[in-house]
Image 1 (spheres, rainbow, N blue to C red):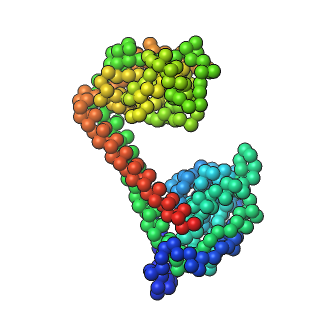
Image 2: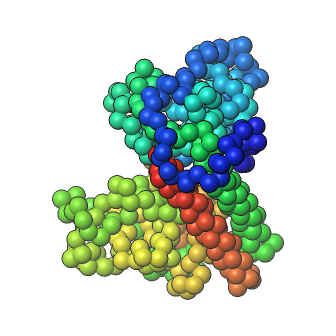
Image 3: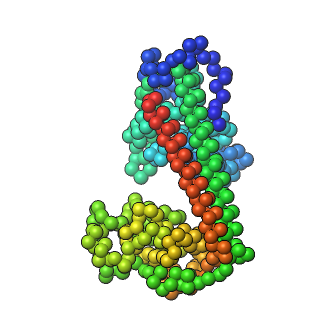
Length: 399
């Protein structure tokens, strides 16, 4: 929501000020225009109060969307008031800070920052703290290796350029307006996700589907286990090459490339039968059998790695539909019941082929609706990313 700035009395000429004209800007230490609030609170004395931990803060988001209660936690906490900024001083690279819209208590791994309104507008300060200029310095001055943490005694000495209050007001109005657009996109995305979840329940319900063995739908060649160790050795991995998708790289419907292993194109050609195609569905052979991967556009030609099972449907246009059929909770529950082994449950191609999935009787209608929902989510996600980029660009241009 855009902050109400009507209580601020602007200069009659404020609207004519160039946004980024730095005439009159002053360099000040952070502690000159902001203070760290150290009011302590014991959870036993705040059982019913709102509690905000670092886990409740989303990176680069000024809004608190979830919280707990004082009765959920132990140990001394910090008290904050409406309008204060809760800033994660531990692991500052996560960029967690939010403006409180209510009173409550928060983790002692956070700082409670309050603006000195005679120097900086409370509505303006959050955007300074979101900027790369502030966040990069916060990371640089953090101390410790496992959980780097910022000390107020160091942060308060860091210097930043501040515009006059009239210019702060104008900038704050613009920045909060962009944030309101971002909040709207985020709300639309949440509602679209909720709709899609309801749609999937409808499409794959027992009333509108038939049960079918996965092996009958995909055929024996449609289910293949990735290469074994004798086919792919650790010394064959290279720094730059074709990605090899392991179970650790599967996340929801994505393939995570952070720690993906790679091989040369020559080695990938040797393992040609394990090359992936767009629309393939991937399962881990062991461990967390709820993980599921989907090969997106541009990922064809990558390699199905050791410990990964590839599922391919001949009808390419309906592979996404198969992914959603396999992502139903009933499938992961079936796999857990039928996996072999106790310490580390395992599945094989025979077990996967015996999976019974719900397949829509009206495949065309189910696919049409799901494609529309996916397209809407993608469009909203794109707009959300653009509003994120615009807000970041404005913050960084300002500071």
